[in-house]
Image 1: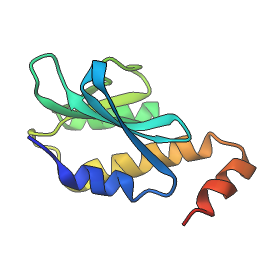
Image 2: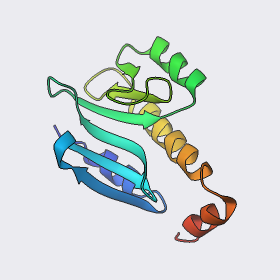
Image 3: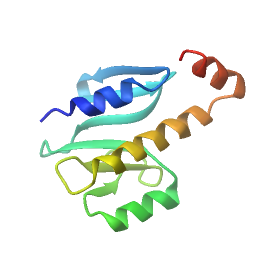
Image 4: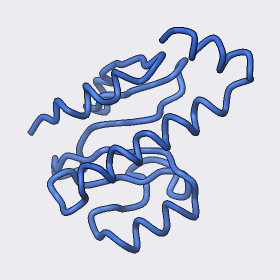
Length: 120
């Protein structure tokens, strides 16, 4: 029940920090301490990935895929959780990760963004 491609994909993002939150049993991928992906499970242990997104786009993908739900233990407007064993294409999950990363990156000042991007 591991998804090494998610770790590789997230870790390849410039400035990505990774940790494991023991009390949540979840891997977190962050940019300067701000989370853009959480990989864990629901209360039954089904693997899910949670990503930040635009509220309107979040609603749209939830309507298109039953395996995408409002953020599990996260803000239901700004976060989506995707059941990894469901019918959501890998390409869409990657796009959602990219958008989440960009949202977090763009939340920083222009100076901080330049510092992060200089780490390439």
